[in-house]
Image (cartoon, rainbow, N blue to C red; front, top):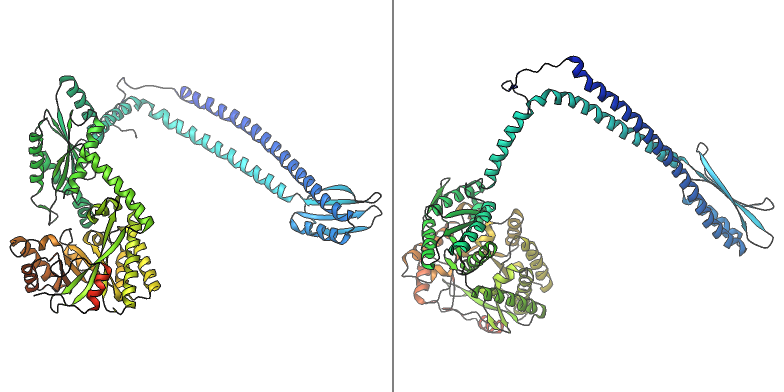
Length: 638
């Protein structure tokens, strides 16, 4: 920090003579001179020693090479193969660019082999060695090599040492210059220290609060939770811990930007705080997660009322940046001392209860119970069995549910649905698909579904069914998408199918988070004749501006909106709006889960193009589907 005119010495001005100011500099210069001399002596010693070592290594290396070459040539000469000895010697000479001359001379002066390279200006070193190759005959091996690489490396070392010494000298000069500045600023040290101390105290206060919401952060939460546990144990009290996680916050954050997401978190903070007592604690755990400490509250009914109050407070719409947003929360609750008696266990069990509330449909709360451990064990068991099923390929199968054209009554396509008959019995996809996504089995499972669907479509094609399309559900996220399209392309080529024989179904969440590469892949699939459907439409957070740019051919209305038709007024309005929106954008619309004639009549009159459900056909085994399709049967659409 620089000096300021407002800062003054509280004890009055200090008078320092020029001689007193110069004395430290004279001592410093003397020290610098002596250190420089010592450094020069050390560097010189290092240079001389290293130079001697490198020349000694060069001599040692030449002696080793001489020994090896003498052994090779001696073997050839002993066998009487002089020509091969000459070839070996010349090859050895050409092997190294540093070899100037290699010569083998018999005892009588006859030159058996000679190799010489034009290195006239080079500084060299040479060695001779006698080779006995018979009882009377000997030959002298002469090898001369250039020392220029050694001289170059020694020179390079010298420059390096010199540069290092100059660098140290430069640093010393800089330090001396800085010392003069330090002397001028030393009088401000006390005031500067005081200011920094105050700033540090302010930072410590800020370190315990979340910068965005102003709530206690995780550091302060851990402290407060440990303190509450100690107090509760001492005075025999109880309290509750709530783990609050916002549903689909990531989708909102990615769709509208981080600024909107930050404003949303601030609004949510205010609404949750309005549901708590003055001495309760709300902390931001991280991201879209909050933790609530409810002190002196052990009755589940009281805690439940607070949880429901929070959920109700978050349900009204929020208006942020001219956008209307809706947010909900999943809440997990653990109680002290009933569920746990340590801070870490209380948070862990509240977190486990929160995930259970998400699995229950979100926008709800759950108390921790020991059965949740059984749920985790069930998940692990399913993961193990699913891995075994993928390895064997015997327990998994696909069934096919037709989609019916409401205008003609004809079957337009079949959706491939995954089924698993495990050793535990039939397990619903709603249970094992989430486990696959969490355990990195989704890639293998998705690959199996694609391969099996294409194999079955090829089998039908060979049996005369040419125009039917098979729709494949793609459940993977971004990391799996590239593998999906590569596998589809390979499978179509392998089975001799066209893109018109297949379609893919993606969820809103997958398309909202779609990257440019995914959009390009979907566009490529459509251009080659494939069809893309947006599955479970209406359950996500699609914005119309985003939807109109997506490469989608079909919108599939989720079955939750069809279930209460035609009596449900809200569902009726949503279904009509989706159909009208799809028509206006040139998309076809499919109604999923049509089970009654009244539902069928309603969606058809509303302008829906296609329908799928038990009213027409349940999911069929492959052979049953073939019999239906080959018989030319028309679904009874009324």
